[in-house]
Length: 384
Image (cartoon, rainbow, N blue to C red; front, side):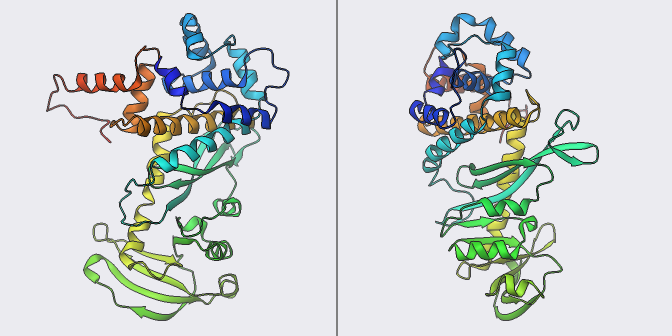
């Protein structure tokens, strides 16, 4: 079946190592962690909305569950208990295993800037939760939320780091948990402007690109000529002159001023890279928009806005499984040479989960059907 073929891309040995690391299958007689993973992955692929929905759909095809790889009996209470009690770190570690497989597959993919270095975008997205059901995740006075902090590899839009926290966690604190890769670029907005942490990136032999605040006090040391018709306004070496910042970041920075030719907005970028052209620095920051697209995509097309449980463990389990499914589809797409977009791939795999044919043939059939009787006047809402 298509679903079981997709699950074949999950390395079984690595999965069992993740389970054994946290003893998640200890004293279980039925419905193993693998069964839980298959049921939740099925829910993500086929857009199930509730535990009852998952139970009804799987029981409707009970004769095919063995071929899907599900050995335990599926019921909403069993699945709810598994999400509530089994350590979410099993699926967080599984996601990291899949990410390690996916990232080399997209090493040579373009992302809009001609640069050989690895480029990461940092940002977070807020997911609302009901405060009365999730009192452990307060955000505002009458509102609960969790944050999904992400470091996204812009080649292939594959996340390399994810941390799930309460909504009140400040973005900048996540920088303390990231192991920075020497030679890589980290692109982030002003929410991450902490000069002590930026200096740690500099000491790690990595590069950053961020925006300056209007209140950031700097003294110019040297200016370079710029081509103003590209939007550049200045390219300078500066030193921080603030009472505290001069000690927190004691070495020179590069300040690039840029005015967008379309919106006429002015941006002031700060970086510790003095070799790239100034226009490339501006383009690197513009490429950060890919992480906003990633957040929008994963919220729209995977189930992380409607939760199947309300404890911290259940919500983190669901989010990590959603991320794992996203990366798994990206792996299958690349390995099988599927030309369809990630959105189309996800939709086709969800609709054909029980088809008994090779995955590649499913997409070939879908392509042939899409090529028939197309109305050129009909707009395609999902042409990304």
